[in-house]
Image 1 (spheres, each protein chain N blue to C red):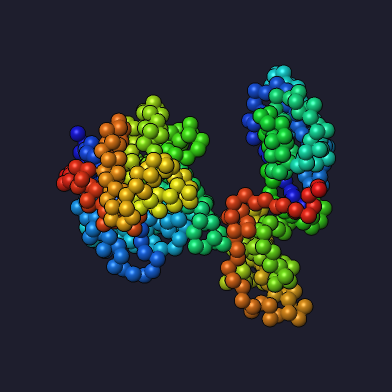
Image 2: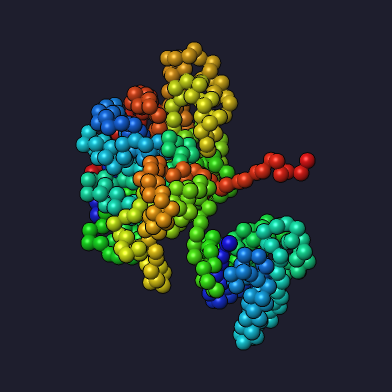
Length: 315
Length: 227
């Protein structure tokens, strides 16, 4: 039995995962303007249906409201944040300063990422920082939390309490390195991980076999990534243009077999529910991470239909 | 030219640990001119390794050679036999030469004996100063042929910053040596050229996608390809 004092950060997400409950996380992209209502609106939709929500950090290298401000806003609206932090736009000073700031504002979950390359975004001429990478970032935050030390070795009086996350793409190459790289992230300090969107279930299961063979599922909480498909056009786009995405043709065909619009959307949601149910049966999967990109409205229905309501409350 | 410095001897020893047949491969171009990795320096390092092995009572065979240019396939052909006979090649070429050698003879074990450090200008005998970072978008036409990307400590496009004093930068070099303020130099030369107005021209942010921020670069000269 885990007691409160053993928590690393004591976030809702950490409590639920530590209690062995099946976790559900969502995702919120901040707006490309100073519009303060966007996160509030998205939070209203997701509140109560997810245990915490990822707040993306200039995702796809496109400038948006920063993840710290949006994460704070989500928490003010009753939704626990998982603040994303990429190495592309900040050096180690900024990443330490930002995590201290986020901690002061009550943010406890942070997802450490390298970040999409600048060439994919709206400022391709910018200078990429990449002072650290996702793994050295995890280690830096772990040392801040557990050793009360900055990366340079200097001590701090009050350490940030953090629940550290990472991402991993089971569908990237070389396949045999993918589970080993997760191991490296665990050693660096990751407490939980979220996968890239899963459409190719057999390949994901194969990756989980490799993860279990290394015993990694006992060292880290694995949340399987789910993206509800809004239409065949989106599925085709993801297959062709989104790097690292593995969308089998039969999935596209299944969606395309329906009429465009509402019928395709309904099929997309149905598919997401089926995937969640199947993923929940995979040994070592501790939850799901639902990335409904600009389709937050689909999340409550999917979570309900997957039998994941009501969300647990762990004291 | 490309400059490099030899790694500390202990680090070199750790890179070759346990190997019985070592080839020290110099390069007779840039690294020879900066007195770091030419044939003569390769010979010296080979001797040092032999002496060390003898002192430690280890049996190690160390040979040396040098390619005219380690970064070109045809010159690598000329040292192929010696490379193939070695357990490990300790390259004294710049990062380009080391990688060319490793690629040519893959999977032969190749280790670097030097740290490649800059594109430098020999200011006086045995002194080199950094002059270029190969950023891929040269703007020194606007800055009196003085590169602020590499010579200004903050790579300012619109300097000088508040840390410039008496023509010097507030930052000092690794050995506490003073650094000239690039923007003070630019200003003085622009004045001498009667082109002061260039100091106040609009300089938009640089396009870093042409540097390493855009990913590994490749240059192809179609017109120069063999027909």
